[in-house]
Length: 348
Image (cartoon, rainbow, N blue to C red; front, side, top):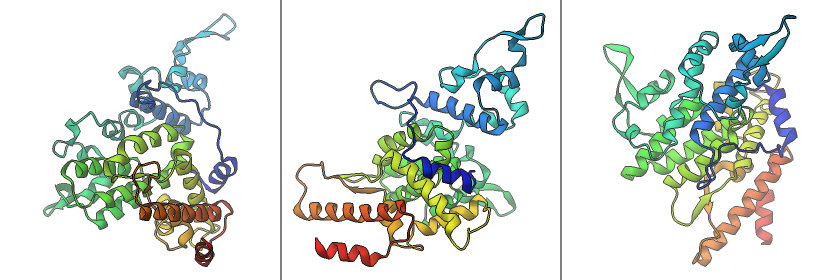
């Protein structure tokens, strides 16, 4: 989790330099999930160890791969870890065990449930509850009810309700993200009435975590997959995703930074649960209308669609003007007065 200084650096450098995507599928234009999972594993190791390069990580985890001459200088090494950095080679079980001994839990980054739920061709994970039970215990406590006589054992699934979704949003981590994607896939299959609420919860979680995913160098690839494959499951005809990939990252950095400008966060170092609590309030009008108008809604009318009615075109233009005003406020780091927007609308 980034501190205030780290968040500010992201805000200041935006628009951020684009990382060239590796292992992009020629048909879909997406980075492969295999590549994405390997790079995420690598970047988290880099973060946890504080070692900046593939060379230093290889030296730390596999010192025997470095050959030394008679002067004890390194004469050669396998240069294997650069392929992990680029997502080109999946680490073998033996290496994973070695890495796990020094960085406990790192193997789960490579095999995180998120990667499988993003694969819409994998229908096996939608059968039964085994996938949901692979999620972190903190998420399972939200979606399962505890046994009456064994409170640490999670039993039957709870119904999807606004309260459940709110609790998942406040978790705002990879497991909550994976859970919401699974719930959206389930909802789309059986056409549940809660689909739009699940989409909104997913949108909010993505807004909060996109900044940290960017630091891990996987944000653009991951958000692109969610925007292109996952959100359409809950999208109505003539709609489009409201934010571009880069806008998710920028918005995430800005609202994370704004937490420290509130009365709750000013001059403090807040734990993640406190930060998400404040950001949820931002996305639900507690700190003004400008944030909501800029980034609050996951979808808007797609004006590229043919045969839109005059009413839809008018509404789309109004949505765009409201979003433009919201972004102006966000980027100028000021809380917008909604009367400004009303005055603009009166002149249209």
